[in-house]
Image (cartoon, rainbow, N blue to C red):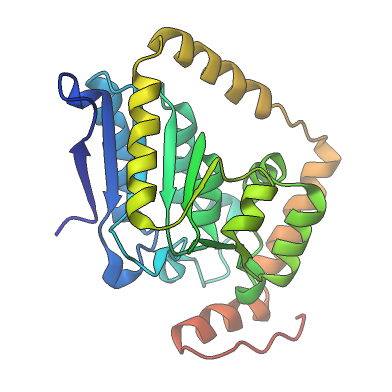
Length: 266
């Protein structure tokens, strides 16, 4: 089975107005590897080509993990300069933010690491009460990229983002609602599906060119985060030190060996 499937779930007379994209690799906890990300990107591009007006991203019904985040096995472990490493997740998130229609995340189960950034990059979020959100790079010794941190700061209060990054502990769907991440909180997966589809169909009845323009303006305005050359150099060095550290190697190795990592700060 392909890692991504699509369905047309718009109104009876215009089913293609709303496209539902389902991550279907639950045996791998929908890890965001290259194949998964390529499938998601292709689905968004195809939906734009066919005149979609709203798109839903979800996992299969009843999953305990919506997505485990970026595929850890794809991270470089050879000491490579991180600035020369092409990050497929960032490339996909650019496609997501550039989509000419609103994208709705329909979430149940655990959302980890880079999958949290995916959800927070979506325009709207419908979450079942089972959903939890955890930003996990500190468990692995991974220095999260600066653009990704900026996405979190745009979606969360600063103190909440700091706690999530520093502790790697999950927050509940109720907390995410209170912080403004979640638009609609529902009881279970069945209600999540119904609510997300209804929201997409409602959007599809509105003026698509106006929505496209407004979304473009919002994206441009929220991308306006400038860094000085000194800031960029300092942040680059901090990230490079983390990428090349023994802690990073230990975090990835411990994940593969299914044990708790022992970080030394070296």
